[in-house]
Length: 99
Image 1: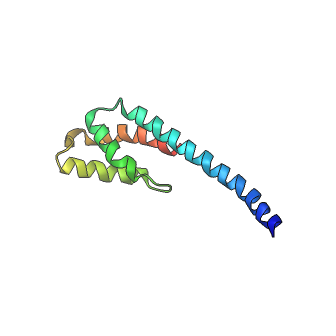
Image 2: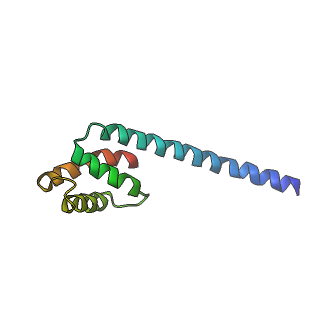
Image 3: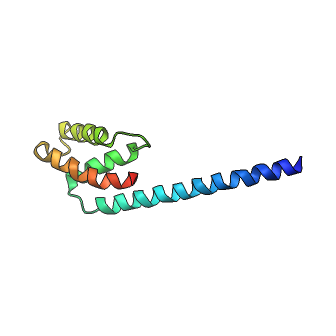
């Protein structure tokens, strides 16, 4: 009985280690994206800030950025004339989260 418990724990160790490494990598990628966002103009930064919390594995980044940029532009938060360029700039930083 004790041997089974020890074997299970030993088998779970690599999985736990992989999860810890993955979490560290995601944190590093978010930090890199935020560093990139520091250099963005205000409108692009608004899109970045609204989109970052919505990014999940398998999410369509282009659709998220487009939807958020459109929402911010219609609300008058960002300039409609430069919304596309701002979205492209924000997306370049947001792509670092997935890399």
